[in-house]
Amino acid sequence: MSTELQLNTRLDKALRIDTAAMEWEASPASGVWRKRLYRAGPQESGRVTSVVRYDPGARFHSHPHPEGEEILVLEGVFSDERGDWTKGSFLLNPEGFEHAPFSEGGCELLVRLRQYPGESRLQCGITPEDYRWQGSPGDVQTMPLYHQEPYRDTQRLEHWPEGWRGSLVFADGAEVFVIEGAIAVDGTELRDRGWLRLPPGRYPATALNSAQLYIKEGGRLYL
Image (cartoon, rainbow, N blue to C red; front, side, top):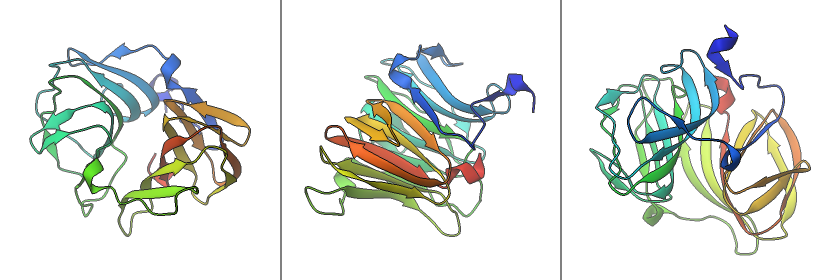
């Protein structure tokens, strides 16, 4: 693979990115900006993980999503033909899906493209009104977002109370994105909008303050 066509594709080492410190880059659509964390393949049609920002009124023309698309709404309201998706909404659009997304008031998203092969994947759309947190207050609470056999990738939200300490065990590796708050994983601090990709292993973890996280396991199998 040409070095011009890859970005952060080495998966056997931990990688931390402070996305809040990155500069926004223009996308092909006017008023849509991105910070690319992972990319393999052609500039505009490869596999990619990005933080994306829509300015108020920005929109894309209708387009398909080969090998699927995943969206987590971080701020604002993201819209498409299926409706309006508020902060905290999660979407997984499988192979063959097509839409014309836009945002009337602006929004910020975590987006993954071409990382969901498999024609049997089901479409998923979850809003904060659908949340059913699992676990006890004062301990880690979990909100499952996506899991479908026989696919190995899973996504969930977690809430860590301030001061919590424990271990994270990831058999297939994982990605951790801090939606809000601050944590430390294996001695590496991660704060608001921080992204961490980890190879398989066990990692000591601490909540430096109350934190809400997005965690994806098994996705490296499709990178």
